[in-house]
Image 1 (spheres, rainbow, N blue to C red):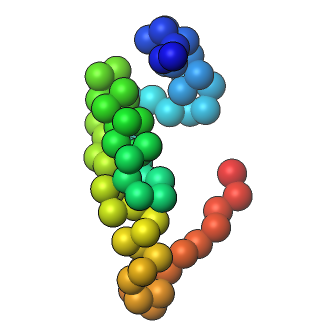
Image 2 (image 1 turned 45 degrees about the vertical axis):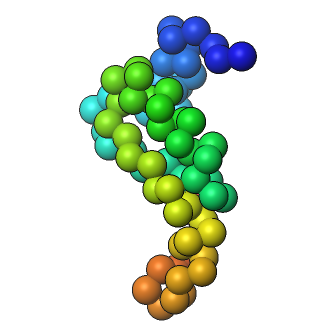
Amino acid sequence: MLLSRDKILEMLAKKGITRDKNFVTYCTGGVRSAWSSSVLVDLGFQVKNYSGSMWEWSASDADIYPLNKFNH
């Protein structure tokens, strides 16, 4: 079940996710990220879905498409 618009916006704001930024969503194969993108677009965010997601990225040359871990 999807949360209310207000609850989703509240949760995103607590994480610093605001409408004045651009976002790219990704997951393993692009399905879950497509759903997330559609919800965010409906809420007024600027979002693009990387449909190839990690399957495509990780299959590419690591020198061109490195995998990096960031700690937030």
